[in-house]
Length: 403
Image 1 (cartoon, rainbow, N blue to C red):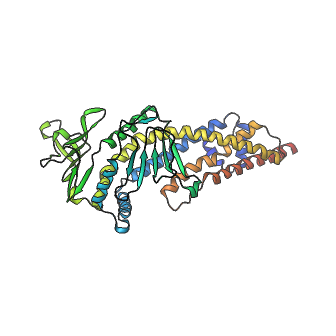
Image 2 (image 1 turned 30 degrees about the horizontal axis):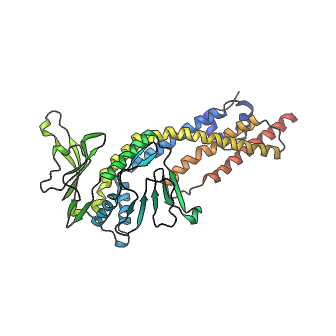
Image 3 (image 1 turned 90 degrees about the vertical axis):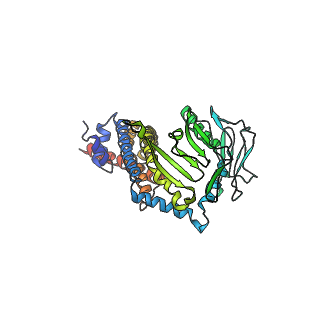
């Protein structure tokens, strides 16, 4: 009968001789079950740490730290001008053609190829040619190349030895395609917005409205450059952002159920004349809470489930590889042991790695004083523990035989 519980194993796997003897003698058929329970526990702990770290982003001191870092980046070399960068961004986005994706294939009704160029630096950012598949950046000045089934980007030959990196668009699920099509839809619909003399204008007839592709009567983004533009208009009440010639408005509609006549708009306003480095950072205050909510409610739960499945699969591979090395170690030590016993010992010998690595990995990102340890270094600890497990059982066998 086994002498130690599951919770004992989480501690005693870190070098207890008696524990590894108990594993070999009394824990038949429980190794992988124990390993699965451990991966669940570790992923829950990691989930709580990440969830706490994300919640901390809403704290005023952390928001200020993020804004200071971005502000320092924007002001680098004193070359940044907020209004100029807004014009630059819309100039680049306006070059993106109407693209859709279906069955992992990108397509467009527009004439190909299309070149995306930074108007300020004349850098060739991307070449888009959805009429072909295989392509190369060699001999071109482009930073990236988008074809009907792949995205090619320049690699870092000094680090990887490769001049190009290829991302194949062939593993997207239907829900991923729907999300990606949504982003492509909005990008292709954006007008060219320009700010001059503290007034905004667009290259389309005003008002120009980008409707939700799933609900055509719902305006998502509104550009109303008329002199009498009213961002409080009921026509725009469900939109995410409203651009007028003098301001950018992020509305929220406050509904009064008792008296519908008292319904009112609330939200944040950025005056075009006040667009500067400091005021551009208001977007952090406006969007951070919603961004955090999306991560916590939609992304983290999926990551928890994915993390458990993926991490358990990786743990099984680690246990198998460690057990094979364990067989070689037992032969070197001239200790006769069955493979299933080595595999059982291996499923517990890797627990120190399984427990410490993901938690340490997360903490190394949130605490700069910690030094990141690559997994191959920590894998060596698994070999150390399987060696320990075999040695203590060899010595225990000798003592038993003497008695």
